Length: 478
Image 1: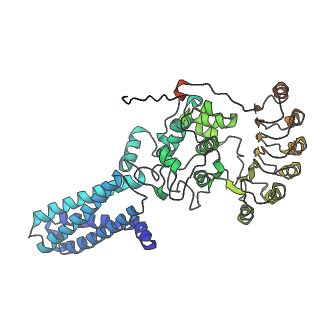
Image 2: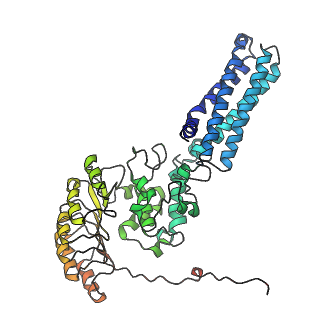
Image 3: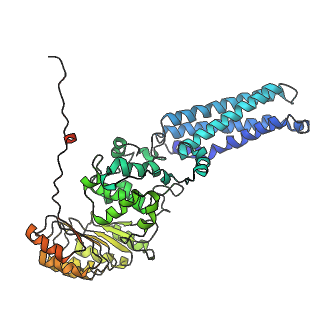
């Protein structure tokens, strides 16, 4: 298995040998038209023999690579048969040229044979480029130059008219994946056995299982991979491929966290103001990118990288630590698999106070005592402490987080009196209070106290649509 895998991985390196060698043989053959070059004719059979052997070796490694299951489909079959044809044509051309010896024998056979070989090499190489770099790779730069379109795949994104009325999967997420992911995870090529070009294959996952956990972005392998630093060998997309922008990553996180729905519109799923501001960039196409990149949810000032040893020690306790954006040093921490009481584990985060800006303790055993430790993480902009054991006393400890923009308190035992303390948090823009002790009568008073904060109390009632019901009729004859 190891040898087969090694042979397959050698194909991209070996496949360039027959291309160069056979092109040289074909070029020399046509140079024989000029008498001064005919003394080099005996070299052609030797060069062709080497090229033919290299083509055969490329076919062997290519067939081995296909057997891994990472490649299949019409494009692979086309490239495979073209490659096998090239190896056969090169071998026949070698036999003809060896028997011919000098130019005077079989000149036309050799010349037209070399032309057929050159055409086969060119076609095989072109289809191989389509397979590894995407359809139309050879012409992409020429077309782009003539139409003022950049060669980056992200330019293919079609802006939507109204993001709130756009369907999350087909109009937004699917377009991002088509532009940035499908060249490696599409119908022709499936690295890791994963396809992202259609919902059925995407939700099924790859060789190592599912990559999307609907409702849990931080636990989804696809989100973990795109959040790794670019230099990490497991980062996706690879460094040599078009990278996801900040708004692409935020879009995918929002979509997965809200159930990875395949049919509903953005307005039907629900979205907070800061995420909506990011998604609005898709209405303006590339014009909105600069504005989104500097969105205040991520600090714009640089920060030193955290100590890898500290990060590793925290991860060993079941805390998920990921970069917020691979291009900077800011981090997010999620206590989803924490192995110790949250209050004591939080103390391990203090060395990361400069880098940590997002913290998630949803459903943990966090108490008011733990909030005192959280208060020392001064750069937090997003804090999820929903369904924990905190009270108004814990909220009081958080009043020093002057950069906090998003706070989730759903399911916590907090009151309006405690929440009114948050008026001192001038950066706060989003507050989630679903299933708290705040009643409808008190909500209006709280909104007046926090006029610049979007308060979300949940409990949405979506309108019934005729398309939500499928009627199945029995058409069998009785």
